[in-house]
Image 1 (spheres, rainbow, N blue to C red):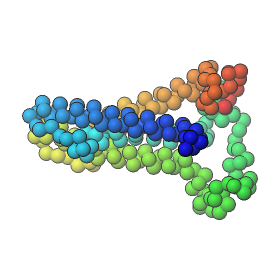
Image 2 (cartoon, rainbow, N blue to C red):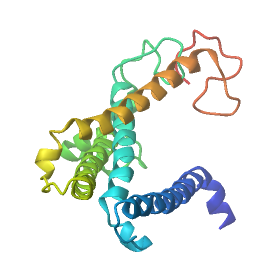
Image 3 (cartoon, rainbow, N blue to C red):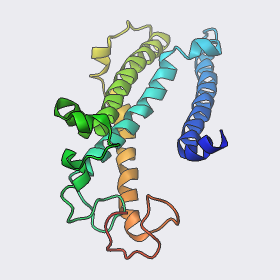
Length: 219
C-alpha cells in the first residue's frame, strides 16, 4: 500500500482535495440555500435533499464546465501553437515527435497503436476528446441545474411560470455564469504560460530547470 501511494501520490492528493472541497461546498451551499428559503417563508431542506437541487448542481457543473473547457482547449492548442521561452510549449522547431507515429511502436505500446485504423485515429486524439466530452457533459449539467435553480428563484420571488432548458440557455443569466468562469480559466493558463518563461519552481515538471536560459522553449 505504501508503495502504491508513493507511485500515485499526485492523483491521490488531487482527488482527495477535490472530495474535501466538494463536501465543504455542499455543506456551505446547503446552509446558504436554506437561508434563502427561510427569507421567502419556506421550510428548510435536509442535506441529502439539497444535493438533488438545482442550486447545488448549477454551482458544481458551472465550475466543472470551465475547467474541462480550459484543459481540453489547452491540450489541443499546445499541439499546434508554441510560445517562445515557455515550459508549457513544445520546442519551436518541433513539428511532430517521432514517437507520435505508429511506425515507431514498441512492444509495450498501447494496443490501438498496434491495431491502427480507426482505433489509432481516436487514440491519437483521445486526451483532448475525453476532456471536451467532459466539458460537454458538464455544460449540460450546468444548463439543467441552472434551469431548475432559475425556476425556483422565479417561483419564490414572483410566482412566475417555469421555463424550459432551451429557454434558459437563451438568457443572459446562463451565459453570464459561463463567461465569468471561462475567462478566468484562460487567464490562469495564459499567466502560467508567460510566467514559466522567466520564473522557476525547483523540482516541478511544469517549470524549466532552474539553470535553463529564459529563451529555452519546452520543459
